[in-house]
Length: 311
Length: 300
View 1 (cartoon, rainbow over the protein chains, first blue to last red):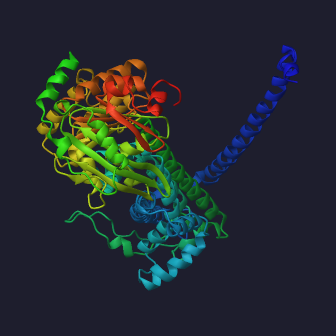
View 2: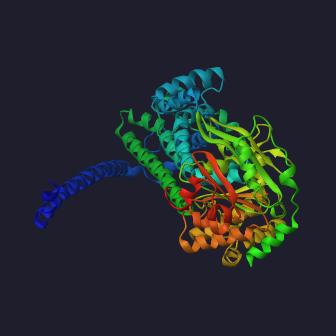
Protein backbone atom coordinates (compact mmCIF):
# COMPACT_ATOMS: atom_id res chain seq x y z
CA UNK A 1 0.00 0.00 0.00
CA UNK A 2 2.87 2.32 0.86
CA UNK A 3 4.47 1.62 -2.47
CA UNK A 4 1.22 2.68 -4.17
CA UNK A 5 1.23 6.02 -2.33
CA UNK A 6 4.83 6.72 -3.24
CA UNK A 7 4.28 6.05 -6.92
CA UNK A 8 1.51 8.65 -7.31
CA UNK A 9 2.45 10.71 -10.38
CA UNK A 10 3.53 14.32 -9.86
CA UNK A 11 0.51 15.68 -11.76
CA UNK A 12 -2.00 14.23 -9.37
CA UNK A 13 0.06 15.46 -6.36
CA UNK A 14 -0.10 18.97 -7.80
CA UNK A 15 -3.81 18.69 -8.44
CA UNK A 16 -4.37 17.56 -4.85
CA UNK A 17 -2.27 20.38 -3.40
CA UNK A 18 -4.00 23.09 -5.41
CA UNK A 19 -7.39 21.68 -4.46
CA UNK A 20 -6.44 21.90 -0.78
CA UNK A 21 -5.01 25.37 -1.22
CA UNK A 22 -8.37 26.63 -2.51
CA UNK A 23 -9.69 26.16 1.02
CA UNK A 24 -6.86 28.36 2.24
CA UNK A 25 -7.87 31.16 -0.10
CA UNK A 26 -11.55 30.80 0.74
CA UNK A 27 -10.77 31.26 4.41
CA UNK A 28 -8.66 34.35 3.74
CA UNK A 29 -11.53 35.84 1.73
CA UNK A 30 -14.09 35.17 4.46
CA UNK A 31 -11.76 36.61 7.11
CA UNK A 32 -11.14 39.78 5.12
CA UNK A 33 -14.86 40.22 4.46
CA UNK A 34 -15.74 40.12 8.15
CA UNK A 35 -12.81 42.31 9.09
CA UNK A 36 -13.62 45.04 6.60
CA UNK A 37 -17.32 44.69 7.33
CA UNK A 38 -16.76 45.46 11.00
CA UNK A 39 -14.38 48.32 10.25
CA UNK A 40 -16.74 49.73 7.65
CA UNK A 41 -19.62 49.85 10.12
CA UNK A 42 -17.48 51.75 12.62
CA UNK A 43 -16.25 54.19 9.98
CA UNK A 44 -19.79 54.79 8.70
CA UNK A 45 -21.03 55.35 12.25
CA UNK A 46 -18.27 57.82 12.94
CA UNK A 47 -18.73 59.68 9.66
CA UNK A 48 -22.49 59.77 10.20
CA UNK A 49 -22.01 61.31 13.64
CA UNK A 50 -19.55 63.83 12.25
CA UNK A 51 -21.94 64.75 9.40
CA UNK A 52 -24.97 65.08 11.68
CA UNK A 53 -23.04 67.07 14.23
CA UNK A 54 -20.83 69.03 11.86
CA UNK A 55 -22.75 72.22 12.53
CA UNK A 56 -21.81 72.01 16.20
CA UNK A 57 -18.24 70.70 15.92
CA UNK A 58 -16.67 74.02 16.81
CA UNK A 59 -14.42 75.35 19.54
CA UNK A 60 -17.44 77.05 21.12
CA UNK A 61 -19.10 73.67 21.59
CA UNK A 62 -16.19 72.56 23.77
CA UNK A 63 -16.10 75.77 25.81
CA UNK A 64 -19.81 76.32 26.44
CA UNK A 65 -21.98 75.07 29.24
CA UNK A 66 -25.20 73.22 28.48
CA UNK A 67 -28.16 75.45 27.76
CA UNK A 68 -31.89 75.26 27.11
CA UNK A 69 -31.07 76.89 23.82
CA UNK A 70 -29.77 74.13 21.60
CA UNK A 71 -27.73 76.54 19.53
CA UNK A 72 -25.76 77.84 22.51
CA UNK A 73 -25.44 74.55 24.37
CA UNK A 74 -21.94 73.02 24.75
CA UNK A 75 -20.21 70.19 26.48
CA UNK A 76 -17.73 72.02 28.70
CA UNK A 77 -19.01 70.59 31.99
CA UNK A 78 -19.43 67.16 30.38
CA UNK A 79 -15.92 66.69 29.08
CA UNK A 80 -14.34 68.23 32.16
CA UNK A 81 -16.48 65.91 34.29
CA UNK A 82 -15.52 62.89 32.19
CA UNK A 83 -11.83 63.79 32.39
CA UNK A 84 -11.91 64.18 36.17
CA UNK A 85 -13.86 60.95 36.62
CA UNK A 86 -11.30 59.14 34.43
CA UNK A 87 -8.53 60.62 36.58
CA UNK A 88 -10.10 59.16 39.73
CA UNK A 89 -10.82 55.86 37.99
CA UNK A 90 -7.24 55.52 36.77
CA UNK A 91 -5.76 56.56 40.09
CA UNK A 92 -7.78 53.91 41.92
CA UNK A 93 -7.93 51.05 39.39
CA UNK A 94 -4.25 51.14 38.45
CA UNK A 95 -2.62 50.56 41.86
CA UNK A 96 -5.36 48.27 43.18
CA UNK A 97 -5.59 46.23 39.98
CA UNK A 98 -1.85 45.89 39.49
CA UNK A 99 -1.28 45.00 43.14
CA UNK A 100 -4.03 42.37 43.04
CA UNK A 101 -2.69 40.86 39.83
CA UNK A 102 0.90 40.79 41.06
CA UNK A 103 -0.20 39.20 44.29
CA UNK A 104 -2.16 36.53 42.45
CA UNK A 105 0.68 35.79 40.02
CA UNK A 106 3.81 36.16 42.12
CA UNK A 107 2.85 35.68 45.74
CA UNK A 108 -0.37 33.73 46.21
CA UNK A 109 0.03 30.04 46.95
CA UNK A 110 -1.75 27.89 44.39
CA UNK A 111 -4.66 26.45 46.37
CA UNK A 112 -8.45 26.33 46.15
CA UNK A 113 -8.81 29.77 47.74
CA UNK A 114 -6.81 31.50 45.02
CA UNK A 115 -8.55 29.37 42.39
CA UNK A 116 -11.92 30.67 43.64
CA UNK A 117 -10.65 34.24 43.66
CA UNK A 118 -9.29 33.88 40.13
CA UNK A 119 -12.56 32.51 38.77
CA UNK A 120 -14.49 35.30 40.45
CA UNK A 121 -12.22 38.03 39.13
CA UNK A 122 -12.72 36.72 35.60
CA UNK A 123 -16.47 36.49 36.14
CA UNK A 124 -16.64 40.05 37.48
CA UNK A 125 -15.61 41.27 34.04
CA UNK A 126 -18.93 39.97 32.75
CA UNK A 127 -21.19 41.53 35.40
CA UNK A 128 -23.59 44.09 33.83
CA UNK A 129 -22.50 47.63 34.61
CA UNK A 130 -25.87 48.59 36.11
CA UNK A 131 -25.15 46.13 38.93
CA UNK A 132 -21.99 48.07 39.71
CA UNK A 133 -24.13 51.21 39.69
CA UNK A 134 -26.50 49.73 42.28
CA UNK A 135 -23.59 48.55 44.42
CA UNK A 136 -22.01 51.98 44.23
CA UNK A 137 -25.29 53.70 45.07
CA UNK A 138 -25.59 51.70 48.27
CA UNK A 139 -21.92 51.64 49.18
CA UNK A 140 -20.24 54.83 48.01
CA UNK A 141 -23.17 57.25 47.84
CA UNK A 142 -25.00 56.31 51.03
CA UNK A 143 -22.75 54.12 53.19
CA UNK A 144 -19.55 56.10 52.69
CA UNK A 145 -21.58 59.26 52.33
CA UNK A 146 -19.70 60.41 49.25
CA UNK A 147 -22.93 61.69 47.74
CA UNK A 148 -23.47 62.16 44.03
CA UNK A 149 -19.91 63.24 43.53
CA UNK A 150 -17.00 62.85 41.13
CA UNK A 151 -15.31 60.64 43.74
CA UNK A 152 -18.28 58.26 43.85
CA UNK A 153 -18.43 58.13 40.04
CA UNK A 154 -14.69 57.53 39.72
CA UNK A 155 -14.76 54.75 42.32
CA UNK A 156 -17.74 53.12 40.61
CA UNK A 157 -16.02 53.03 37.24
CA UNK A 158 -12.76 51.90 38.90
CA UNK A 159 -14.67 48.93 40.31
CA UNK A 160 -16.09 48.27 36.86
CA UNK A 161 -12.72 48.13 35.10
CA UNK A 162 -10.82 46.43 37.91
CA UNK A 163 -11.31 42.94 36.45
CA UNK A 164 -10.05 44.15 33.06
CA UNK A 165 -6.95 45.68 34.62
CA UNK A 166 -6.31 42.57 36.74
CA UNK A 167 -6.66 40.15 33.85
CA UNK A 168 -4.45 42.26 31.54
CA UNK A 169 -1.80 42.73 34.22
CA UNK A 170 -1.73 39.03 35.04
CA UNK A 171 -1.19 38.22 31.40
CA UNK A 172 1.59 40.79 31.09
CA UNK A 173 3.26 39.53 34.26
CA UNK A 174 2.96 35.93 33.17
CA UNK A 175 4.68 36.78 29.88
CA UNK A 176 7.92 37.56 31.74
CA UNK A 177 9.95 34.36 31.22
CA UNK A 178 10.73 32.16 34.18
CA UNK A 179 14.43 32.32 33.24
CA UNK A 180 14.50 36.03 33.99
CA UNK A 181 12.96 35.51 37.41
CA UNK A 182 15.41 32.69 38.12
CA UNK A 183 18.33 34.88 37.10
CA UNK A 184 17.28 37.55 39.57
CA UNK A 185 16.57 35.09 42.37
CA UNK A 186 19.93 33.40 41.77
CA UNK A 187 21.64 36.74 42.41
CA UNK A 188 20.05 36.89 45.84
CA UNK A 189 17.07 39.11 45.07
CA UNK A 190 14.02 38.87 47.32
CA UNK A 191 10.58 38.29 45.90
CA UNK A 192 9.78 41.98 46.17
CA UNK A 193 13.02 42.92 44.40
CA UNK A 194 12.31 40.47 41.59
CA UNK A 195 8.83 41.98 41.24
CA UNK A 196 9.81 45.63 41.50
CA UNK A 197 13.11 45.54 39.56
CA UNK A 198 12.20 43.05 36.87
CA UNK A 199 8.69 41.70 36.54
CA UNK A 200 6.84 45.04 36.72
CA UNK A 201 9.21 47.10 34.54
CA UNK A 202 9.21 44.40 31.85
CA UNK A 203 5.44 44.17 31.81
CA UNK A 204 4.68 47.92 31.83
CA UNK A 205 3.59 47.80 28.18
CA UNK A 206 0.95 45.15 28.81
CA UNK A 207 -0.21 46.77 32.04
CA UNK A 208 -0.69 50.19 30.44
CA UNK A 209 -2.47 48.63 27.49
CA UNK A 210 -4.92 46.89 29.83
CA UNK A 211 -5.34 50.10 31.79
CA UNK A 212 -6.21 52.15 28.72
CA UNK A 213 -8.54 49.50 27.34
CA UNK A 214 -10.27 49.57 30.74
CA UNK A 215 -10.50 53.37 30.67
CA UNK A 216 -11.91 53.35 27.13
CA UNK A 217 -14.62 51.05 28.40
CA UNK A 218 -15.28 53.27 31.42
CA UNK A 219 -15.43 56.49 29.42
CA UNK A 220 -18.55 55.34 27.58
CA UNK A 221 -20.39 53.89 30.59
CA UNK A 222 -23.73 55.56 31.21
CA UNK A 223 -25.87 53.23 33.27
CA UNK A 224 -23.84 53.17 36.50
CA UNK A 225 -23.45 56.95 36.44
CA UNK A 226 -27.18 57.49 36.06
CA UNK A 227 -27.75 55.03 38.89
CA UNK A 228 -25.58 56.94 41.31
CA UNK A 229 -27.25 60.17 40.25
CA UNK A 230 -25.26 62.05 37.66
CA UNK A 231 -26.80 65.41 36.81
CA UNK A 232 -27.44 66.25 33.20
CA UNK A 233 -27.48 69.99 33.51
CA UNK A 234 -24.50 71.64 35.17
CA UNK A 235 -23.65 75.19 34.35
CA UNK A 236 -20.49 75.45 36.43
CA UNK A 237 -17.14 73.71 36.59
CA UNK A 238 -15.81 71.82 39.59
CA UNK A 239 -13.01 73.52 41.44
CA UNK A 240 -9.74 73.15 39.57
CA UNK A 241 -7.45 70.39 40.81
CA UNK A 242 -4.55 72.82 40.43
CA UNK A 243 -4.25 76.06 42.34
CA UNK A 244 -1.82 78.94 42.22
CA UNK A 245 -1.22 78.77 45.96
CA UNK A 246 0.58 76.17 48.04
CA UNK A 247 0.16 73.18 47.92
CA UNK A 248 -0.76 73.84 44.27
CA UNK A 249 -3.42 71.17 44.10
CA UNK A 250 -6.73 70.66 45.77
CA UNK A 251 -9.14 67.82 46.21
CA UNK A 252 -12.30 69.86 46.64
CA UNK A 253 -13.43 68.81 43.16
CA UNK A 254 -13.75 65.23 44.31
CA UNK A 255 -16.91 65.92 46.27
CA UNK A 256 -18.64 68.05 43.66
CA UNK A 257 -21.59 67.11 41.51
CA UNK A 258 -20.82 66.03 37.99
CA UNK A 259 -22.03 65.23 34.57
CA UNK A 260 -20.25 63.20 31.91
CA UNK A 261 -20.19 62.92 28.13
CA UNK A 262 -22.51 59.92 27.76
CA UNK A 263 -24.97 61.43 30.26
CA UNK A 264 -25.03 64.67 28.32
CA UNK A 265 -25.62 62.77 25.10
CA UNK A 266 -28.35 60.69 26.63
CA UNK A 267 -30.06 63.83 27.84
CA UNK A 268 -29.91 65.53 24.46
CA UNK A 269 -31.05 62.49 22.51
CA UNK A 270 -34.17 62.21 24.63
CA UNK A 271 -35.26 65.80 23.84
CA UNK A 272 -37.91 66.38 21.15
CA UNK A 273 -36.20 69.45 19.63
CA UNK A 274 -34.25 68.19 16.56
CA UNK A 275 -31.57 70.84 17.18
CA UNK A 276 -30.49 68.86 20.24
CA UNK A 277 -30.03 65.78 18.05
CA UNK A 278 -27.28 67.68 16.28
CA UNK A 279 -25.66 68.40 19.65
CA UNK A 280 -25.90 64.72 20.60
CA UNK A 281 -24.27 63.67 17.33
CA UNK A 282 -21.44 66.16 17.80
CA UNK A 283 -20.88 65.00 21.39
CA UNK A 284 -20.93 61.40 20.19
CA UNK A 285 -18.28 62.13 17.59
CA UNK A 286 -16.08 63.76 20.23
CA UNK A 287 -16.60 60.87 22.69
CA UNK A 288 -15.72 58.35 19.97
CA UNK A 289 -12.68 60.45 19.13
CA UNK A 290 -11.59 60.42 22.80
CA UNK A 291 -11.92 56.61 22.89
CA UNK A 292 -10.00 56.13 19.65
CA UNK A 293 -7.29 58.47 20.91
CA UNK A 294 -6.93 56.43 24.10
CA UNK A 295 -6.76 53.19 22.16
CA UNK A 296 -4.18 54.77 19.87
CA UNK A 297 -2.07 55.62 22.90
CA UNK A 298 -2.40 52.02 24.10
CA UNK A 299 -1.19 50.69 20.76
CA UNK A 300 1.72 53.11 20.69
CA UNK A 301 2.76 52.26 24.25
CA UNK A 302 2.65 48.57 23.51
CA UNK A 303 4.63 49.03 20.32
CA UNK A 304 7.33 51.02 22.10
CA UNK A 305 7.78 48.51 24.91
CA UNK A 306 7.67 45.54 22.57
CA UNK A 307 10.45 47.09 20.57
CA UNK A 308 12.58 47.58 23.66
CA UNK A 309 12.01 44.15 25.15
CA UNK A 310 12.34 41.17 22.91
CA UNK A 311 12.72 37.82 24.62
CA UNK B 1 51.40 23.95 31.50
CA UNK B 2 48.01 24.01 33.09
CA UNK B 3 48.67 20.65 34.69
CA UNK B 4 51.96 21.57 36.28
CA UNK B 5 50.46 24.72 37.81
CA UNK B 6 47.71 22.65 39.30
CA UNK B 7 50.06 20.09 40.70
CA UNK B 8 51.93 22.86 42.45
CA UNK B 9 48.71 24.25 43.84
CA UNK B 10 47.71 20.94 45.16
CA UNK B 11 51.04 20.23 46.74
CA UNK B 12 50.89 23.51 48.60
CA UNK B 13 47.42 23.02 50.03
CA UNK B 14 47.12 21.15 53.29
CA UNK B 15 45.64 17.66 53.27
CA UNK B 16 43.87 17.96 56.64
CA UNK B 17 40.22 18.42 55.80
CA UNK B 18 39.41 15.10 54.23
CA UNK B 19 40.42 13.06 57.24
CA UNK B 20 39.11 15.39 59.93
CA UNK B 21 35.85 16.52 58.41
CA UNK B 22 32.74 15.70 60.45
CA UNK B 23 30.45 13.06 59.09
CA UNK B 24 27.23 11.48 60.42
CA UNK B 25 28.00 8.07 61.80
CA UNK B 26 24.61 6.41 61.88
CA UNK B 27 23.81 3.04 60.30
CA UNK B 28 27.10 1.57 59.17
CA UNK B 29 28.38 2.27 55.69
CA UNK B 30 25.96 4.54 53.88
CA UNK B 31 26.20 5.23 50.19
CA UNK B 32 27.59 8.59 51.22
CA UNK B 33 30.43 7.07 53.15
CA UNK B 34 31.33 4.86 50.26
CA UNK B 35 31.47 7.93 48.06
CA UNK B 36 33.66 9.71 50.55
CA UNK B 37 35.97 6.71 50.69
CA UNK B 38 36.21 6.75 46.95
CA UNK B 39 37.43 10.31 47.01
CA UNK B 40 40.17 9.22 49.39
CA UNK B 41 41.77 7.43 46.51
CA UNK B 42 43.17 10.85 45.80
CA UNK B 43 46.50 10.90 47.55
CA UNK B 44 46.17 13.11 50.64
CA UNK B 45 48.93 15.49 49.62
CA UNK B 46 47.10 16.19 46.37
CA UNK B 47 43.74 16.89 47.97
CA UNK B 48 42.54 20.42 48.40
CA UNK B 49 40.36 21.86 51.12
CA UNK B 50 36.70 20.86 51.02
CA UNK B 51 34.45 23.75 50.08
CA UNK B 52 31.13 21.96 50.33
CA UNK B 53 29.93 18.53 51.23
CA UNK B 54 26.59 16.93 50.43
CA UNK B 55 25.69 14.40 53.08
CA UNK B 56 22.99 11.87 52.23
CA UNK B 57 21.16 14.53 50.29
CA UNK B 58 17.76 13.45 49.04
CA UNK B 59 15.29 15.63 47.24
CA UNK B 60 11.59 15.25 46.58
CA UNK B 61 9.20 16.87 44.11
CA UNK B 62 5.94 16.26 45.97
CA UNK B 63 6.09 12.47 46.36
CA UNK B 64 8.65 11.82 43.62
CA UNK B 65 12.16 11.28 44.90
CA UNK B 66 14.56 12.89 42.46
CA UNK B 67 17.76 12.48 44.48
CA UNK B 68 18.59 9.43 46.54
CA UNK B 69 20.99 10.01 49.35
CA UNK B 70 23.76 11.68 47.40
CA UNK B 71 27.03 12.33 49.22
CA UNK B 72 29.89 14.17 47.60
CA UNK B 73 32.73 16.50 48.45
CA UNK B 74 33.31 19.64 46.45
CA UNK B 75 36.94 20.80 46.56
CA UNK B 76 37.81 24.43 46.94
CA UNK B 77 38.93 26.24 43.75
CA UNK B 78 38.44 23.17 41.61
CA UNK B 79 35.99 22.34 38.89
CA UNK B 80 33.62 19.50 39.68
CA UNK B 81 31.55 18.15 36.81
CA UNK B 82 28.25 16.30 37.16
CA UNK B 83 27.52 13.96 34.27
CA UNK B 84 24.84 11.43 33.55
CA UNK B 85 21.96 10.73 31.18
CA UNK B 86 18.89 13.02 30.99
CA UNK B 87 16.71 12.87 34.06
CA UNK B 88 19.45 11.43 36.27
CA UNK B 89 19.07 14.29 38.75
CA UNK B 90 22.27 16.18 38.03
CA UNK B 91 20.52 19.53 37.51
CA UNK B 92 18.27 18.83 40.48
CA UNK B 93 21.36 18.19 42.56
CA UNK B 94 23.03 21.39 41.33
CA UNK B 95 19.99 23.47 42.17
CA UNK B 96 20.08 22.27 45.78
CA UNK B 97 23.29 24.24 46.28
CA UNK B 98 21.55 27.59 45.80
CA UNK B 99 18.09 26.50 46.96
CA UNK B 100 16.53 27.18 43.56
CA UNK B 101 13.98 24.48 44.35
CA UNK B 102 12.50 26.68 47.07
CA UNK B 103 10.77 28.60 44.26
CA UNK B 104 8.76 25.50 43.35
CA UNK B 105 5.97 24.59 45.74
CA UNK B 106 5.86 21.16 47.35
CA UNK B 107 9.54 20.38 47.21
CA UNK B 108 11.52 18.94 50.09
CA UNK B 109 15.16 18.36 50.94
CA UNK B 110 16.50 15.68 53.25
CA UNK B 111 20.08 15.36 54.39
CA UNK B 112 22.60 18.17 54.47
CA UNK B 113 24.78 20.28 52.21
CA UNK B 114 27.51 21.77 54.37
CA UNK B 115 29.38 24.84 53.22
CA UNK B 116 32.90 25.27 54.59
CA UNK B 117 34.72 26.83 56.31
CA UNK B 118 31.75 28.22 58.26
CA UNK B 119 29.84 24.93 58.37
CA UNK B 120 26.37 26.11 57.50
CA UNK B 121 23.84 23.68 56.11
CA UNK B 122 22.71 25.17 52.80
CA UNK B 123 19.48 23.17 52.60
CA UNK B 124 18.42 23.67 56.22
CA UNK B 125 15.07 25.34 56.78
CA UNK B 126 16.77 27.64 59.25
CA UNK B 127 19.05 29.04 56.57
CA UNK B 128 17.44 31.73 54.43
CA UNK B 129 17.60 30.82 50.72
CA UNK B 130 18.30 34.49 49.93
CA UNK B 131 21.46 34.29 52.05
CA UNK B 132 22.47 31.09 50.26
CA UNK B 133 22.00 32.73 46.86
CA UNK B 134 23.99 35.76 47.98
CA UNK B 135 26.96 33.44 48.47
CA UNK B 136 26.52 30.95 45.64
CA UNK B 137 26.15 32.15 42.07
CA UNK B 138 24.55 30.40 39.14
CA UNK B 139 24.76 30.42 35.35
CA UNK B 140 21.84 28.85 33.53
CA UNK B 141 21.35 26.62 30.54
CA UNK B 142 19.92 29.32 28.30
CA UNK B 143 21.63 32.72 28.43
CA UNK B 144 19.20 34.86 30.41
CA UNK B 145 20.43 38.45 30.56
CA UNK B 146 17.95 41.01 31.87
CA UNK B 147 16.49 43.29 29.17
CA UNK B 148 18.62 46.08 30.60
CA UNK B 149 21.95 47.56 29.60
CA UNK B 150 25.10 45.44 29.74
CA UNK B 151 26.31 47.57 32.65
CA UNK B 152 23.07 47.21 34.60
CA UNK B 153 23.08 43.46 34.06
CA UNK B 154 26.44 43.08 35.74
CA UNK B 155 25.70 45.71 38.38
CA UNK B 156 22.39 44.18 39.44
CA UNK B 157 23.82 41.75 41.98
CA UNK B 158 25.82 44.59 43.51
CA UNK B 159 22.74 46.79 43.75
CA UNK B 160 20.83 44.01 45.50
CA UNK B 161 23.72 43.90 47.95
CA UNK B 162 23.25 47.60 48.63
CA UNK B 163 26.29 48.92 46.75
CA UNK B 164 25.43 52.45 45.68
CA UNK B 165 28.74 54.28 45.17
CA UNK B 166 29.03 54.79 41.43
CA UNK B 167 32.80 54.53 41.25
CA UNK B 168 32.82 51.30 43.21
CA UNK B 169 30.09 49.74 41.10
CA UNK B 170 31.90 50.72 37.89
CA UNK B 171 35.11 49.20 39.18
CA UNK B 172 33.42 45.92 40.10
CA UNK B 173 31.54 45.75 36.80
CA UNK B 174 34.77 46.15 34.86
CA UNK B 175 36.49 43.53 37.00
CA UNK B 176 33.65 41.08 36.47
CA UNK B 177 33.52 41.68 32.71
CA UNK B 178 37.27 41.17 32.48
CA UNK B 179 36.90 38.02 34.55
CA UNK B 180 34.33 36.75 32.09
CA UNK B 181 36.57 37.64 29.11
CA UNK B 182 33.95 40.02 27.77
CA UNK B 183 35.38 43.44 28.63
CA UNK B 184 37.22 44.08 25.37
CA UNK B 185 34.13 43.28 23.34
CA UNK B 186 31.68 45.46 25.25
CA UNK B 187 33.69 48.25 26.89
CA UNK B 188 32.55 50.75 24.25
CA UNK B 189 28.88 49.88 24.51
CA UNK B 190 28.16 49.24 28.16
CA UNK B 191 24.87 51.10 27.78
CA UNK B 192 23.44 49.02 24.98
CA UNK B 193 21.02 46.25 25.82
CA UNK B 194 22.32 42.93 27.06
CA UNK B 195 20.00 41.35 24.53
CA UNK B 196 21.92 42.94 21.66
CA UNK B 197 24.84 40.56 22.27
CA UNK B 198 25.33 37.21 20.54
CA UNK B 199 24.39 34.01 22.36
CA UNK B 200 27.94 33.27 23.49
CA UNK B 201 28.47 36.86 24.60
CA UNK B 202 25.16 36.78 26.48
CA UNK B 203 26.31 33.69 28.33
CA UNK B 204 29.60 35.36 29.24
CA UNK B 205 27.57 38.37 30.37
CA UNK B 206 25.63 36.04 32.66
CA UNK B 207 28.93 34.68 33.98
CA UNK B 208 30.12 38.25 34.60
CA UNK B 209 26.84 39.01 36.36
CA UNK B 210 27.40 36.08 38.68
CA UNK B 211 31.12 36.85 39.15
CA UNK B 212 30.42 40.45 40.16
CA UNK B 213 28.83 39.25 43.37
CA UNK B 214 32.02 37.40 44.27
CA UNK B 215 30.39 34.02 44.90
CA UNK B 216 32.03 31.28 46.93
CA UNK B 217 30.75 28.63 44.56
CA UNK B 218 29.65 29.17 40.98
CA UNK B 219 27.10 26.72 39.61
CA UNK B 220 26.85 26.08 35.86
CA UNK B 221 23.77 24.28 34.60
CA UNK B 222 24.70 23.02 31.12
CA UNK B 223 26.02 26.46 30.21
CA UNK B 224 26.92 25.64 26.61
CA UNK B 225 23.98 23.52 25.50
CA UNK B 226 22.43 26.45 23.62
CA UNK B 227 25.69 27.64 22.05
CA UNK B 228 27.65 26.94 18.88
CA UNK B 229 31.03 25.14 19.05
CA UNK B 230 33.16 28.30 18.95
CA UNK B 231 31.19 30.02 21.73
CA UNK B 232 31.29 26.74 23.64
CA UNK B 233 35.08 26.60 23.39
CA UNK B 234 35.37 30.12 24.78
CA UNK B 235 33.09 29.34 27.72
CA UNK B 236 35.05 26.17 28.47
CA UNK B 237 38.31 28.07 28.38
CA UNK B 238 36.78 30.61 30.72
CA UNK B 239 35.60 27.97 33.17
CA UNK B 240 39.11 26.53 33.27
CA UNK B 241 40.45 29.97 34.11
CA UNK B 242 37.79 30.62 36.75
CA UNK B 243 39.19 27.83 38.88
CA UNK B 244 41.78 30.25 40.24
CA UNK B 245 39.09 32.46 41.73
CA UNK B 246 36.11 30.35 42.56
CA UNK B 247 34.89 26.83 43.20
CA UNK B 248 32.94 25.60 40.19
CA UNK B 249 30.30 22.90 39.86
CA UNK B 250 29.19 22.26 36.32
CA UNK B 251 26.40 20.07 35.01
CA UNK B 252 27.06 18.91 31.51
CA UNK B 253 25.53 16.62 28.99
CA UNK B 254 28.74 16.45 27.13
CA UNK B 255 31.33 14.02 28.47
CA UNK B 256 34.15 15.52 26.45
CA UNK B 257 33.35 18.82 28.07
CA UNK B 258 33.53 17.30 31.54
CA UNK B 259 36.86 15.70 30.63
CA UNK B 260 38.22 19.00 29.30
CA UNK B 261 37.21 21.41 32.04
CA UNK B 262 36.88 19.51 35.29
CA UNK B 263 39.21 18.25 38.00
CA UNK B 264 36.63 15.96 39.56
CA UNK B 265 33.70 14.24 37.96
CA UNK B 266 30.60 12.72 39.47
CA UNK B 267 28.56 10.26 37.46
CA UNK B 268 24.88 10.16 38.40
CA UNK B 269 22.20 7.76 37.31
CA UNK B 270 18.50 7.63 38.31
CA UNK B 271 18.97 10.08 41.15
CA UNK B 272 21.93 8.29 42.63
CA UNK B 273 25.59 9.09 42.67
CA UNK B 274 27.24 6.11 41.00
CA UNK B 275 30.84 7.18 40.99
CA UNK B 276 32.86 10.21 42.01
CA UNK B 277 36.54 10.55 41.34
CA UNK B 278 39.26 12.66 39.84
CA UNK B 279 38.28 13.32 36.26
CA UNK B 280 41.35 11.64 34.80
CA UNK B 281 40.70 8.57 36.92
CA UNK B 282 36.98 8.40 36.19
CA UNK B 283 37.39 8.65 32.47
CA UNK B 284 40.37 6.35 32.08
CA UNK B 285 39.71 3.81 34.75
CA UNK B 286 36.11 3.86 36.03
CA UNK B 287 35.49 1.50 38.92
CA UNK B 288 31.81 0.88 38.20
CA UNK B 289 30.38 -0.96 35.24
CA UNK B 290 27.57 1.63 34.81
CA UNK B 291 30.08 4.47 34.60
CA UNK B 292 32.12 2.62 32.03
CA UNK B 293 29.05 1.87 29.95
CA UNK B 294 28.02 5.52 30.02
CA UNK B 295 31.38 7.04 29.16
CA UNK B 296 31.94 4.56 26.39
CA UNK B 297 28.59 5.58 24.94
CA UNK B 298 26.63 2.41 25.54
CA UNK B 299 23.66 4.49 26.78
CA UNK B 300 22.80 8.07 27.54
